Image (cartoon, rainbow, N blue to C red):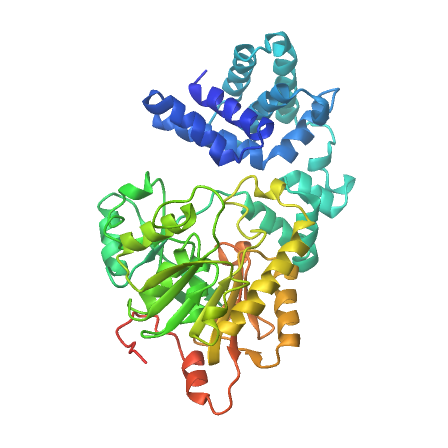
Amino acid sequence: MSNARQIAFLALRDTYKKSLYADVALHRWLEKQGQNLSTADRRLATELVYGCVRSQRTLDALIDAFATKPASQQPLNQRLILHLGLYQIQYLSRIPPSAAVNTTVELAKKNGLGGLKGFINGLLRQYLRQADTGTLPAFCYLQKGELDTVAYLGTAYSFPDWIVNNWVEQLGAAEAEKLCAWMNQSPSIDLRVNPQKATLEQVQQALQTKEIPAQRVTIASGDRQFFLPQALRLQGSIGAIQALPGYSEGWWSVQDSSAQLVTHLLNPQPGETVVDACAPPGGKTGHIAELIGDRGTVWAIVKPETKHRQPGYGSQRSKRLQENLERLQVRSVKIELGDSRNLPQFQNQAHRVLVDAPCSGLGTLHRRVDARWRQQPGNIPELAQLQSEILTHAATWVKPGGVLVYATCTVHPLENESVLETFLAHHPQWEILPPDASSPLFPLLVDGKWMKVFPHRHHMDGFFMARLQKKASGYNKFRSEAIAHFDFLGNSNRKPK
């Protein structure tokens, strides 16, 4: 038995017993192994931990189908070892079924469950026999007719019913199933090329020297293809991000394409004052600085933390943000520690404001394997209230004629459309400013108002974004500029105001 399975078991045990995030628990055990673990074993341990956490509802349904005692009533260690065995058989075709069974039995013996080796061996082999002969029992997740649509999708794809129900209400059952399947795929890695330091072609060529293909990212609209201006998507195995060409030189940052679109929608210009109301981890802050050519002022608001304060930075989050800005070699960003619901000093000071609001993250569940289980439906109204408070106060920072972009990485309407509709109903001096038909954002337009990215349609993180303008009589020049075609070929035509 490889060390990978033992590490996966220990990390899973810590995840559930100590309520740790899966990535934190896994990192601790991998660090303990140091150089004693091969690259292949590290990858297998990672796949097993993330896969078992993500697929826990499906794996429990399998246990329920073949064991006399349901998964919820089994001791934790026994349940986790069964999860590891079933996950390998169910999802990892590269591992021979006999090897999955034998290593799972050995794992049980190594962790004090030798007395249950017969039960574990029997359950796994029974599943294999019935799968081979096509005589699997009519247990819930294989039989659509046995359950209602939401329960079927939730069990088959391992999601809580409340999340699936929301997707079914928005998209219908067929599209909701596609979204569930997409969210269980491994996430892609996109780069945002820094036009101040490199070109797309330069980065592509540098990556090619390491045999890492990098493709342009597009959004389809009918028979047209819109290229995202700074985005490259990496293909295949890439190794450590920090070791890739151009990282230390600030040529690029890791940022999903949908997150890049948010800053393009904001469309900051050289010489402007821009406020990023919810800056950490700082990807969009750096993007704003790149688009203004590092000429102007970008205020990055970081909410103070009560722990882990660092001299000179105020918090771990501002420290990480500052380190990333230094890598990108930008100087236009100023960090302000404070709560974006109460910063009166910015009133009427900004040409543009970005509110990338704290949210449920339901558009990025493929990246955070335990988020689907940690997030609860009762959190959504609380988040919507927080989002409304931030939006309402940040709107006071915008100069007459200025622009505000509201964005979240969730596709839940209560955090998106409802927040904006409520805001607009109480603030008649604001209006929606959609992109024009020549913009890569145009294919994402919904109801002629806001943009919504659905991962299974657009092959990037789920996002919501809307651009608003503060009305000002006679201020047509700014409006004309704001709705003009984006300069997606770089900053060569940008001029300070």
